[in-house]
Length: 130
Image (cartoon, rainbow, N blue to C red; front, side):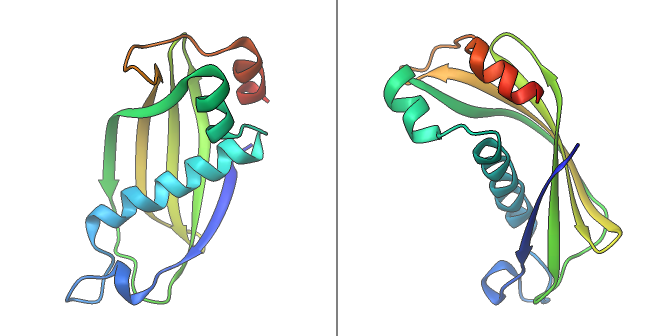
């Protein structure tokens, strides 16, 4: 089941044409992933402090399908597509009502604070699986 996060587009999110600046879609999906992690009961600060583990975006494949505009209410839909040993893949969409404006597939690596790949702890993997 997808995790849903709602947000509103503000003036600061738009460009001179009054549409959402392309880089802000990446910020919106980051918020969606962060809220998904929080919803499955993972405290990222504690994960870093206690386990020395952080999440790092390794790859993003994105499609910009239709523009969002100032004051639009958007929904960021986040779904775990795949979980691997030291990474996971998220499929994300940004919608305005039923209209899909943006899609992305994001590969997130699990890293030590020293920058080395580390396996996802079993407890985290089970929470992610739902």
